[in-house]
Length: 144
Image (cartoon, rainbow, N blue to C red):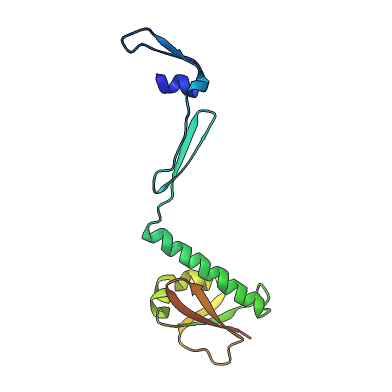
């Protein structure tokens, strides 16, 4: 009840065994602090908390989305048309695992007819991908 009165900016009367004391809303200081792993906001008496902890699946989804963004940038840099079909080759220490996990999504999003591991003969563009702890280089070639 005390918290509800304070949040509603109403006076509160406390009786701690002596004379009752009335406290005005301005006598209280409310401060919301974020607890680790949460982002919080208080407005108009409403507290909203969002969990900000990243689980392995969310981290992997972010890594895939960043790879797709960088690969789309490589398509633009190579001046491919939006509808151009491509071949994509990934190389690097993590290429096989990354392609096994995300190859279908990458192929669909990039209009890639194939996603292979290794070098791509006569690639139109070769770009390193900056994915933090994942080492990848992408080679793209427009399909005639």
